[in-house]
Length: 102
Image (tube, rainbow, N blue to C red; front, side, top):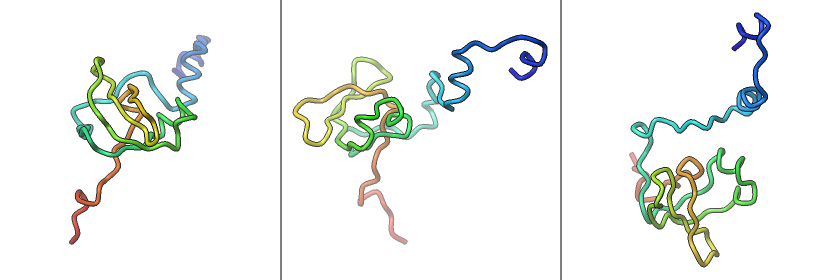
């Protein structure tokens, strides 16, 4: 991209915005990602907090899969009904049973 700017090409506003924010619309490689477990506790990830500031500090429980392959159904603490969130917006909390003591 810097070569294009040096040659006189200008970058689009969309490219500039995504380059500055450090986020991308492209999903990460799912093969290296940890699988999401139904019933596990979660909190909003850094990306999720940036995209949904009102939900940034909330935690809840993963209750199921969504109709969309890239989303999951979650129930926030204190809420009556679940909502769908993109998988990249949540990160599982490590439970005490998953922590292995030496």
